[in-house]
Image (cartoon, rainbow, N blue to C red; front, side, top):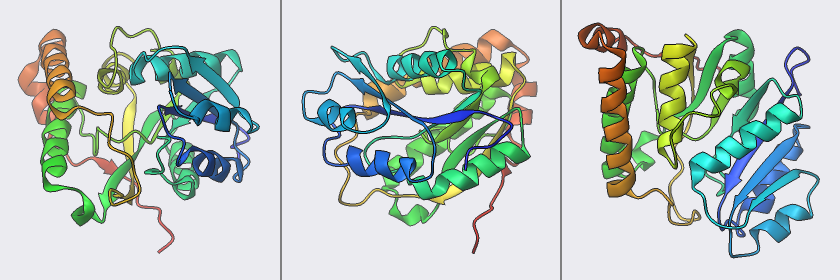
Length: 251
């Protein structure tokens, strides 16, 4: 199902995902898509499980954070000659069944980042998480000077122009916000959101995202970017428009 015009792969950063990683990777492989897995210093069986699968496995001997895992994966994808990557988490929260719709939106909107936005079944999102995501969308959209739905989703399509931002000086979870902002401001990329289900119950391990530490880091970075790019009120007005959403679900 790979787009003949664009060579792309799926990138899966992971840390201690021995429960879910095999099923996640195999579900993507079933689509016929190349997979790169970046193990960020797991101390469980995650790297051994992945090593037995027909994928590219990159390993960190110590934990470097999600930003460095994505950065390592981007560089490997570029080294292998891919034009785009689709990222997803290794804990099973993101479904391979959503990949064709995200890829279709990317083909429809070349030169855009495509986000698998958790807009379906919002009632499954914990209230605190839903409020935090709304605040993040407000701030990061402002920094991007364009509306973005679900800035905190890790299921994203990055075109080549976004991959070229691999050396952005941002770490951990800030990297995902930074690449949205820089791609919008410096590469003039648009952002499209494809609705996916919100999946939070039961089977997922506790998030590596620290609500206090990581939200603070993202907030400080975002405020700095708003000020850096200037035209603060113009950027705010542009960010208040309706986000571009492609609801291409078959039902």
